Image (tube, rainbow, N blue to C red; front, side, top):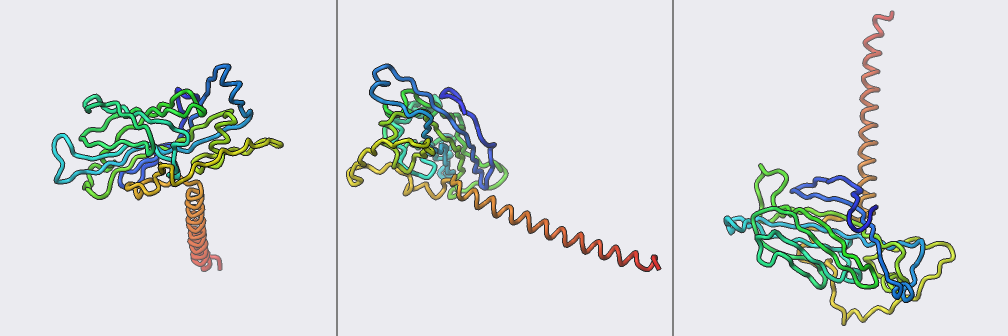
Length: 273
């Protein structure tokens, strides 16, 4: 857990099939406020709000349409870990591409926070997230290495199966203002803490009419079928299934050892008499 200028990873890179990779980390934000803001926005002591996010890229090989300068089409993005709208917290995202691109600094003012391009080379993309004024007055810098080619470079490339590389992060906001807490306490993209005993919730802010609000979630995104699932429930199910497999393997080995011991005893019996 670190401040805004750096981040700490909770997990190692996890290679998946078809060149898919995931990384996890947890970034803790700090908030500086002047005297006027401190008066207007009372801080909630011993409270933290966290926003699970995923950032990464999906790239498709162009196949017969590929040329020397454009072999892949790709999309780099920041999304909610459960594909919820991040616009409730993030105001804008700035993607800094390689200097060889026209207008390499791209600003995305509303969700979904993503950028699509075409090219042939892999490079590091700097992603800067700016938050709403009641959230945090410091931006968060993320870095993602654009991945175009699968880990197994000897295998055949496919125009239909993309290379996916994603990282999981939890942005933590300590001591949020009452206004921020009230605004996001019912939002599905936000993870709220267990509140201290006797703590009184600030009144929730009325939600704007959904019909008048532009949807910024990525649940129906055309690339969503390729998104990785970072659900804790799914991870627990996978762990339980793996444990059952291990226990079954142990039981099988015990049966084999018991059988070998029995055969060994039968072989020793004639010489004992």
